[in-house]
Every structure is written in C-alpha cells, then in structure tokens.
Length: 120
Image (tube, rainbow, N blue to C red; front, side, top):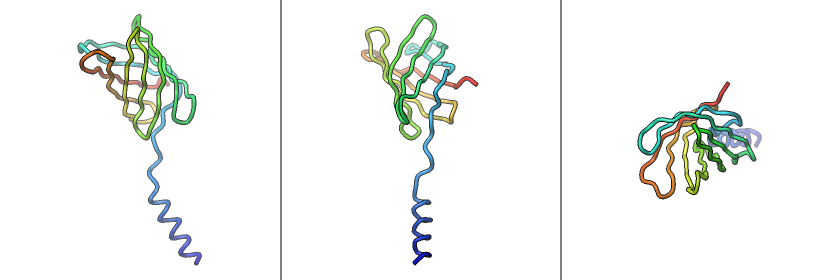
C-alpha cells in the first residue's frame, strides 16, 4: 500500500506544471517604439498588490501614465490611462528581470513595442 501511495505522489508531482514566472516589484528601464515607429525611453515602477496583481506607472520623456497590471503564467498585462485614452500592453515574462511586449491605445491604429528591464 505504501509503495502505491509513493508512486501516486511521484506521478502527481511530475504532472504539476513547472513553476510560473514572476515579476518583481521595483523600477524598470523602458525602451520602446511608438505607433509611428519612433523610439522612446524612460522608466516604469511596479508595485505588487497581491500575488498576481500590481500597479504600474510609466515616465517616458514628458509623458506619464499609470494603470493596473496582472500576471498569469508567463503573460503580464497592464491597462493604463494616457491623457483621455485607455491603453493596453501585453508582455511576455522573459525571466525575473525582463519583460518584452506590445501595446496599443484606444482609437489608434497599430501597435508599439516595449521592453522593461529591472534595475539592479
């Protein structure tokens, strides 16, 4: 009986998914492209509010925006307010200190790109 329980626990352990990626709180360096292809740089600050949710603030040049974010497996998404518009960005978590994503703004055509790298 003990052997069957041990085998059952071993199989259950092997069936579990690998540990999901995580996003750390802190200040990130931002590098991206606008909808027209021009480049921008700045910072983003992420504050964790639970195991899967956070708040985020960007500062790029003279522009600031803030929003909420959520982590699911290796996808990290944020919605934000930029002036009178609502935006959405979806990142792929590339490790504990790198996020690569695409973004758009309501009422605009196309998408931009953005990379966040955690400052050490």
